[in-house]
Length: 97
Image (cartoon, rainbow, N blue to C red; front, side, top):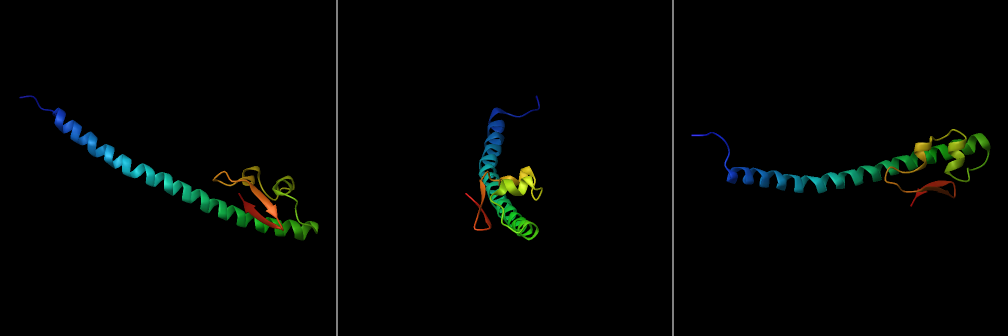
């Protein structure tokens, strides 16, 4: 008698693995979206603190995020949110859209 798996056993295993994958993939995508949104909120707080520092050192508010990047207050990577939202400065405060 040969040892091995039957077709029915293989189909059953593949079905169970497929169900597990179908359950976990949407959860992973949702968690990634939440993490990116929280990262954006944290980045906005950093930019707000750099706006205050810029104001203290230069006596005026920066016009936009590019001013902060040009003066070395932020890096190029900090110019956009992790979720891809554009960051802009309005009334001395950073916002993302």
